[in-house]
Length: 189
Image (cartoon, rainbow, N blue to C red; front, side, top):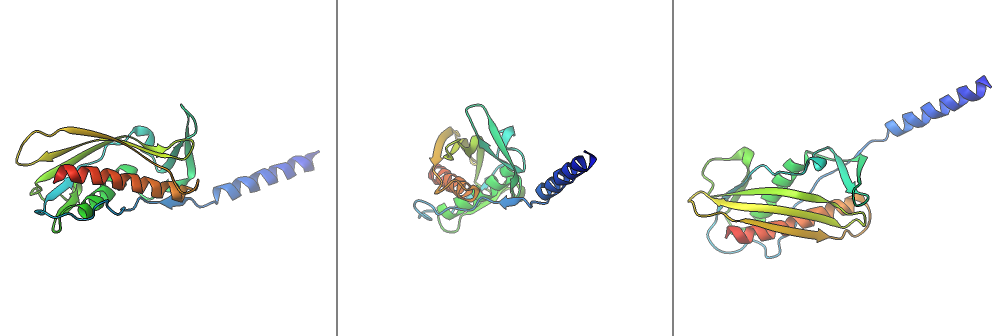
C-alpha cells in the first residue's frame, strides 16, 4: 500500500517537474507592408503616444477568447514585451513606412518636442475570437501641434489567421495593426 502511494507521488512530482520545465514560447508583433507604401507629399514628424489597452490584455501571457464570456490565458505563450509598448512601437514603424519619404515617427518615449502630429490610440479589443479570428477594435485621434480640431475615429478590423497556431494568430494581429496604420496614415496626410 505504501509503495503504491510513493510511486504515485513520484509520478506526480515527475509530471509536475516536466510541466514546469517547459520553456515558454515568446512572440512579438511585426511591421506589416502598407496598402499604398510611402506616399508623396511633404514629410511629417509625428509621435505615437502611449497606447491604452484593456486590462485583461495587460499581462505577459497571450489571451484568447474561449467563449462569449470566458478568456483563456496561455501560460506558456507569452509576449516578448508589454503588449501596449509593443503596439506603440510597431504602430510607429508601420506609420513611418506609410508616410511620405523623410517623415519621422517616434514613440512618446523619444519625443523631441518638435513633432507636428501626435497619434493617440486606445484599443478596446485586440485578441482572437474562439474561432481564431483576430479582432482589433480601436479609437484614435491625430492631434496637430499647430492646433485645429482633432476628431476621434474608430475602426473594427478582423483578420483570419492561416491556421490555428499562435504564430499565425500573432501574424494576423500584426496585419490588423498594419491595416489600422493605413487608416491612421490617411488621417495624418
